[in-house]
Image 1 (tube, rainbow, N blue to C red):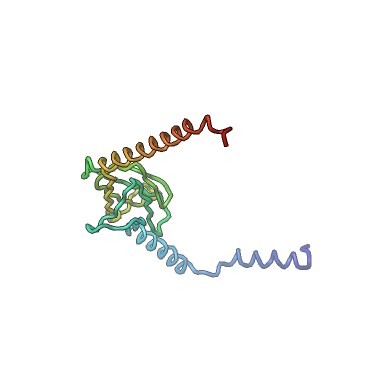
Image 2: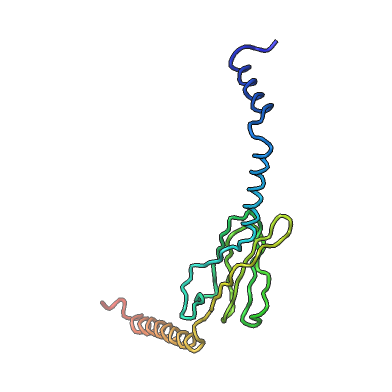
Length: 178
């Protein structure tokens, strides 16, 4: 004999919803088909690759320290593959990252032009299309300017040491005379 009261009523209500589905097969099929079509559409659209560096006059991003923080956006829930070229071999893309993160920081980039692209890798190991290439031009301070700054810094250090030594030698015996 079932219990009377709020608990038994809750059990009846749950059983009512479980035993009698409210959606017909055709409606469920339509919902599932729509979800599959939406996932296929997301899989066909490449991720949008971006960074926060300024662009130069050529339309490429400009960098003076060899570091880039890449980000990509997509609605697809999958892994991503990031590839990049380097100035020595600009035609060949090499693997730089594979995982679920939607950003990557790359540092230690050589001086020259680099190209980056990203794509989604789905659960069935199929790949989506590549994003548009993002171009980065890395330029460092010229070596002649670095040498000049090092020489000037050396001169300042030697002048400081000389001033301290000269002051010490001139005033070491005169402490008690005042």
